[in-house]
Length: 274
Image 1: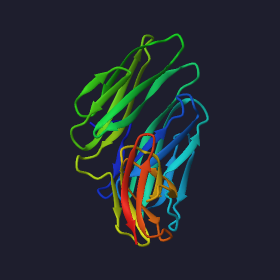
Image 2: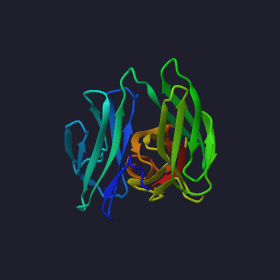
Image 3: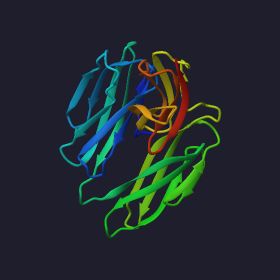
Image 4: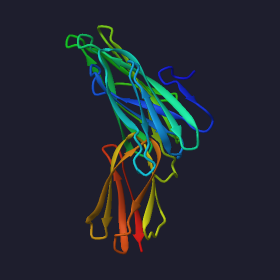
């Protein structure tokens, strides 16, 4: 059965998924972003936040940036349903919704977890509980999306096949606070290149395909043979395949390193400039 917290409505041509950025479980300001399953460019992005407000954004066809992120301030604690609907250039439409739960300051019960890729196919997970000062955690229980489970505030888990896995953390306290947090992790295949650069050698425009394990902002550096950084960029990566283009026409001929890094990821490649 599909997770009721993420109900997808899509046709056979495209789909989107919306994620919530939660500063704290009591914060009235929430961030949202969406990912899409295809490379077709969106033309319109419409958001509704479940509190009677909505907004639509027309995507500038000449811009290299796609407005995938948005912030919204809710009027009060409560449970809301935030949705995104995306119209793509090929006429396909897709939408997704997520439940937004904002607790009052007197009702502290929640949590979150972090994940880091520590080696090929192996992740480090750490859970964090948010509860009242007079409460205490009884246990952290994990499911890793591949049929296995674990316990403890900090755990490591190795995946043996490529794919996208739904990792869930269950937290229970002695005063009855029960929290479930679920997110996806993407495991690259054993022979799947995390970074592909083409054409190589290149004259003017370098195309980079980066397979990300997280939805996050990454830093990109182009480094010459002497070790000097000659170009720097920042890009919002979505979990899975990301395709970017870079103007390298101004670089002198020679060999360069192309580095993509974040707190959770690091990958590099070599290209040659004619």
